[in-house]
Image (tube, rainbow, N blue to C red; front, side, top):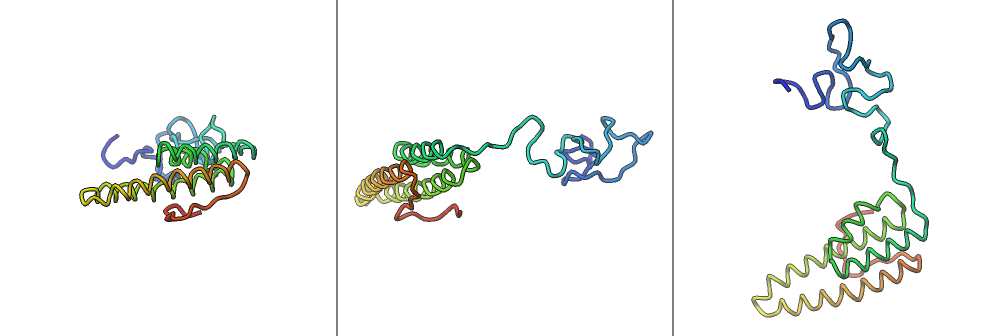
Length: 167
């Protein structure tokens, strides 16, 4: 890439539109003309949400949504923030029920991670061990209650949870 060129090539702006430059013989790179409905310079055509060959995420059945929501809450008990984060990033476009459950689980476990961190900092004073123990008990009890609610097809809102990720 030479000086002044953008990553998509010299023939287009960052928004994917051609910049109107003239090319020898009137030909554009790759023999494609802009606006002919094909991919141009590695950019997706307007209105196309996914690259060629990829399918948009398909909605899950209600049973699958309940299963994944339940597994997200149970996984949060054992792996704290990791499972709800991965579940939220992977499953949020697969259904409203699983999206809401992964979102509230992620918010709760971020709150619990902050409590664990505060307990670790204050453990020098001796009170931190009580904070860590209380956070662990709260995480287990509310995680089980949320998993039961998800398995029954009900929505659940964790108490003591800070809303970091809004609906």
